Picture 1 (cartoon, rainbow over the protein chains, first blue to last red):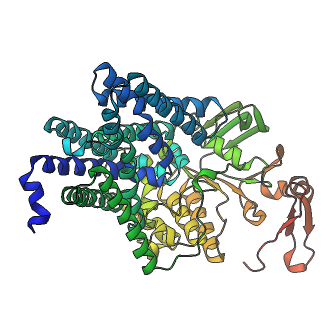
Picture 2: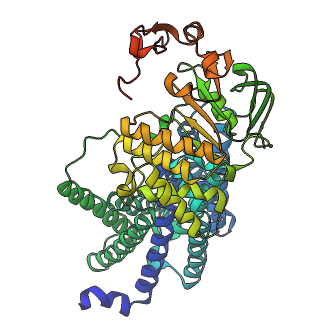
Picture 3: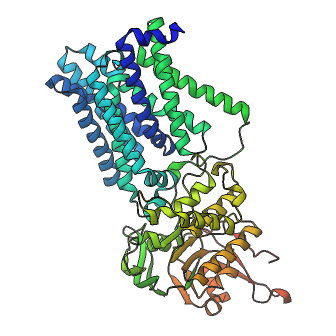
Length: 288
Length: 266
């Protein structure tokens, strides 16, 4: 038992890391559920990585990284919305363009500064073991905010996942609630990058929620499973990193993805794959 | 209050007007069937009525206001549902969604909401499926659930886009009875349909072929000549028992014809 608990009791930094990871897991499971259901993985990915130039610029200017990440996320969402609305290009093209531009800009900023390769590693892979109490507080507030807004907007979010037009006809403008959803994804990314890093926050956004989608028949249950999978991954990942001296945040995400494949394996054993066609949400064709 | 008041209405997307010059009044409790081939403008008109597509030309008022301004009073069945398969959601949750337009963001559903949901499930004979995940349902079962969702809305104005798609004979019967009752309750009804036998029961029929072919009572409007104009090919059924029945052969984009016949027994 000591092997499983003591690292967290004997080391304050391990306990803080665990709390940080669980907070990230909660926010990611709630908003990641909608990312998975609505097929928004690509914009989630783009947001997670597109915040890089914002963070790099903020560090260069001596400002909090979180502030830079927030600016980067807003530029990302605004850019994607602009390109999608002003051209006939599909949103994934718009997302791809912005994604590449932001990533390139981030690398340019980092290379111009020359001096902070260590910082870059911290941005990409997080510093979950270096989480401060102050950071924990910020994360707790952000997580409560994400959960509260998602609870208030539960009906429009559900309608949006069911059918955006149904949301519009029901009096919940789909564009407005889509933007709100994107802002929550952005907030989650901004808050989570310090712990799991920009490369891996995406994994926390997808893997636990995707596991929930495999196992649950209700959205609330899907979120709950997501929280459990995310928290369990954090615990197991931290434990592994403590005993085997491997990178903490990467291990956490690996565990989360491993749990997904385990769930996939188990559900396939239980019920042989149904011969059902899966509708592609991208081709919601309009027929007059 | 009038359900639809349209004058010189043109519907379409952006610059492209699909159908122009629609003059139309549907009173409260009135019914209108939209008949035409795929691409004739039925769905575009329907999507304009519910406020999903802005009015391209002319004037249109729905339930005494601009389209889309009365969500609690309008129920809409779309032709396609984007999710269906991936969403982890139960039948009863789908039907409950219809109450959101009245409840708004936060109001708790009351006993009346629950009763409406139960009643609607019963109307479409899907009570046994209430706890089933949607993704386990067949296409026809799913369509029944979507129709139950519309019923549970308890709307003043109901707009249906091809409601019988995928329904079996039993489902169709349930549908016809339930929506006849909705009309009787005082709701107005607009339905896009390929089913001439159903359309003829409506107060008014609007024949569309990227223009208004005819508008009027079904018995007047649904003549072989007009159906010919609308669909391309009409075969009149001369068999004594089937007098007045038509078989319509749709010409879709000039390619091989799809033939739609009415079910032999009703």
